[in-house]
Length: 181
Image 1 (cartoon, rainbow, N blue to C red):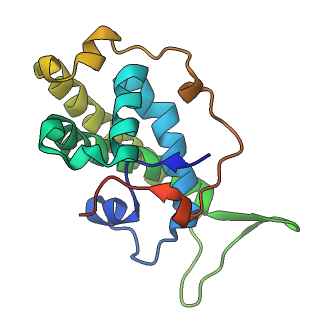
Image 2: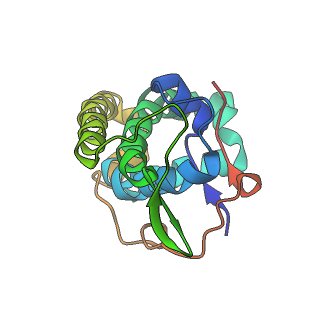
C-alpha cells in the first residue's frame, strides 16, 4: 500500500530551522503519524480522504480544486509541519537498531539532555496548536468551499483510513507529495 503524505522535507525546511540534511526516510513516519493522529481529527474523515484522493490523483493542481490547494498549502502544511516536528524531535534523538536504542553523538557537538529535547517538542506542539486554530477558523469561515467538512461535522468516522496502522512502506519512491515549495 502506498502512503500519501501531504507534506515533505522541503515543507519542514521552509517552516522550521531544521538542518537541510534531514533524512526523509526518518521523518516520513512522523508525517504519517501526524496526519493520522492530529490532522484527520481536525478535518474529519471526509475532508481528509478528499485531500488524500486529490493528492494521489494529482488533481490538487487543477483550477477546479484551487480551494483545496490553498487549504493544503497555506493552512494544513504549516500545521502538519509543527505536529510532525513535535513527534520527530524527541523520537529522532534516539536510534533503534538490533543492538537496542542508542543516542547519536555528533562530532563538534554536544548531545542535548532529554528535558531539553522535550522542551523543543513542546514548543512545536504550542505552535502547532496555533496553526490548528488558524486552520479551524479558515474552515469555518469558508465552509461552503469544503462540503466534506460540513457534512462530516468535523468528526472522525471509523473508516479504513483511520485504521491503517501497519504494513506501510515509506520508501521515498513509494510516497506521493502534493507540491514543492
